[in-house]
Length: 539
Image (cartoon, rainbow, N blue to C red; front, side, top):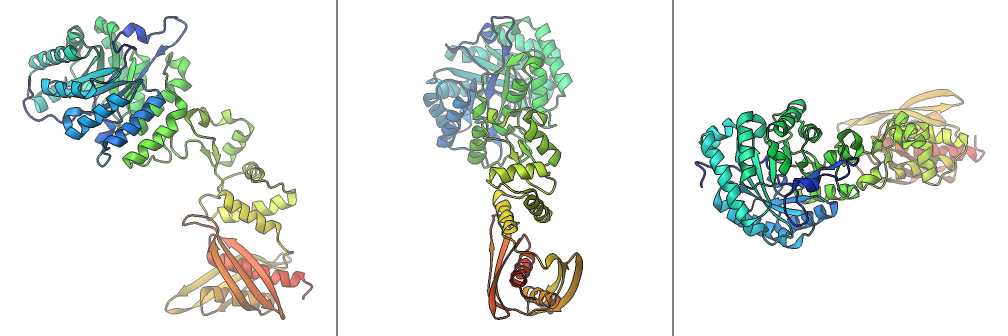
């Protein structure tokens, strides 16, 4: 039983779930009590379909590490790989089958005897083994890829299921490219494979072609047209080519699917697969709507996501639902105020429920006073209203030029503001013209008694030009005895801190200033030193 021509790795198939003894019995998937929701089995194919991402190949040790974490996560089925694809993958699937307990361990096989033999060799030592067989059912796949007619492909599917059944009680059959298949033919294939012994029938949207309403209707019509589906698990496997993998999977659940095949972080061939974390949390958050539940330990979701990202070297986009770094971050002042009053105002999922310690209030220029006060209290600062006003003004000045204000940024701002001397002169702004072929020119504006004073000066460098300009405005000269500049926070937009020691009128005065702009930080430090001079009673 061979295939006429090359067959690529299937990217639309995935395993199902089983009973404790490894048998596929649909009745065990439903709650006995009519008042309780039905269970949706979660079939994870990260180690098979997810690994088909270019550059994401996992070695045996890495596959085992992820599989053990998937078991802790509580998935019902782990599709550990495509054993016939390489000797290394065969060994990796064998290792997972032998060492990981709890979930069903499935191996993928084309509908040919050799593949099935190898798949069984890979999973036979599993606590709960499964063989997952697939074959195209759409005319596009039959004619263009397999070079077969419908009847011979149907016969091949039946023979493959029967052959796999000789090895393993639990056999899943996938009708590859089901969403583009002729409906009547699809029904015939499914019915025949159930009679041949399939315990799970998978109806994949292999190329992400379906739309939610259409895909949900397909699942509903299959249930009505093929009564034998009541005896097995009906599974779905959706790809994300149109960005609809999760929506299609959830539409299928609403219309009678009992197993969803998915991957961590939605990784997979082309645009990826349905995202496990999004499906699980959608069902959990809207359980009454779906009348369904999963048995996933959701507190392991974030840890699993980060592990897969690290081992596959595939970053998680910041705005990724559930597990992205911004999923529980709030930067809008309005949102932050709502979160501080009641988390339910802007969070429908608690970050703790997916294994994230807490939401974060990201301090930016858009953050409100409530969020700033909250973070200051967290850092241990109890400020008077007057002190808070000063800190808030300085915070906005820095936040306008930094994307985010870290706790260290904020601590530095507070310490500078709270240790301020009376400001005879207040820094307002500066402009610099500088280059390696011209003499630097600086224009600085300071405020004294509410009046802005602007002057300009040159120097042998931009900082020197700024210092000369400040001296012209304050009417005093100083000798720079020490100058130190350092980054006080991390990153390319780090907050710079300048410290100066200036001899003015025979005495040494220290000054400190901070800003994301090191020249501005230097200017603030120089003005601070002169303010200390004036605060000491000097005119």
